[in-house]
Length: 548
Image (cartoon, rainbow, N blue to C red; front, side):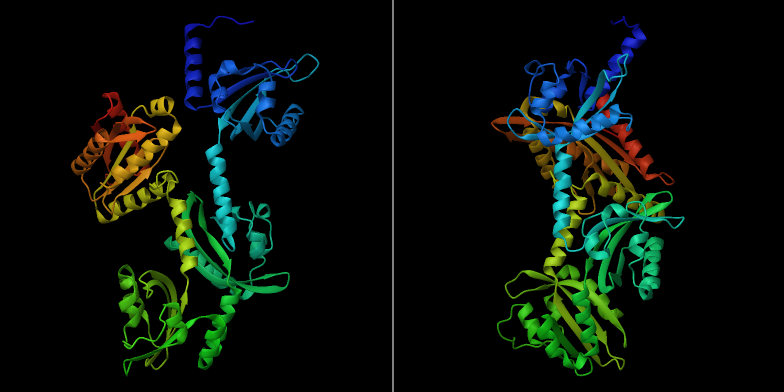
């Protein structure tokens, strides 16, 4: 039996329904005892139907759900009905009208019970998570292809440590299951070689103090077997009292033993190179002469030794962007010391290889000995993983996480060096209409062509990111408010002139822009709020304009 609502209550209900609609959630109500169901329009749309095409009974759920997922769903429901969980929640597949499977996050709660204690009315919602599940699967696939473990390691001020995420490879490296170290990383630390603990602890402390990459080679002992591993990770402030490192650890036992053998057997390098396929070179600084082993010619694609044996062979064939790094390594090389450098060098067919050179100058300062190893495959995988972590998979623009980190860094630089910094936020006007009128593929095409078009207007120093569904942001170092406003206007005009063609349709869009500038003392969140405030003002003025 329903009662009439007073005006304030009616307004509240309207607001509530509006909020539910804004979340794109499908809602459902189910009478467990009678099987009666009530769905909203979005619930049906998620699986490609109109509401009147579905029967208002539990059969509409049962007939469209994946049989395997129904087992889990029923188990979760029984746990909720029995009081073992305060809510019902399950991720499940539903068959779309056109035949493919759609993933939904299904959650709810029993609101009424019969007089004899049986569950009666249960209410809940469906949120489509197909894209999220696909991203999870894609990341897991990539992680499984990477030798070793991809992880997040978190350290708290009180000394506690944990691995909130670790790929399955953590068992290969440390002999522990990922779920056993989610809250406590002590099981991992117990496998570390005691002699290497001071070095590991020191490198972690240095990385934390300087917020620089953690790089470390060390030994682990699992089931009595000693192995060498290499770790590299980037620190990020996680909370007020903790820092997380995101990176990977790989088993380098084979390579490490080879390097140690080379160190012990320097005079027998020819045999070592045959075993390791590691190039070797020697340079006499006094006589300005150099010798390269046959393996170096093989790595660089020389069918026969070149006539010229110039002393600066590597420098001249290195990638121009890496030259400064190479010159710095040469400057840092001192008698009795070693430098380790990774850079690109040109193959005889014109493409560039990634190589790692470990170079040592003998104590007398006359001879320099070096090894060169082709690390192209490892480096390309590393760069690919890094790009996937920083880029939006649909458009190729930077993602929200990268944007936030860049904003924090640039605000810090702005404060320290008194450099100007502007931020522009904008979103597409009435983007939902595009999806509704032309379909999601057309909406995706709009986003892709927007990034391609506006990306051509971005300077190399700017950061252009997709920070939400149809929301974008632009960081403009060394631009004043007036300059940034002109930049935003160029973006607005370019977007207004853009015509996107999708399946025979011509689509034109506009966007509203908000511009703000960093002032001394303002946090990155405050700068972002100022830009968002200007964006809202642009929308209030009729959209398709710039407000600063």
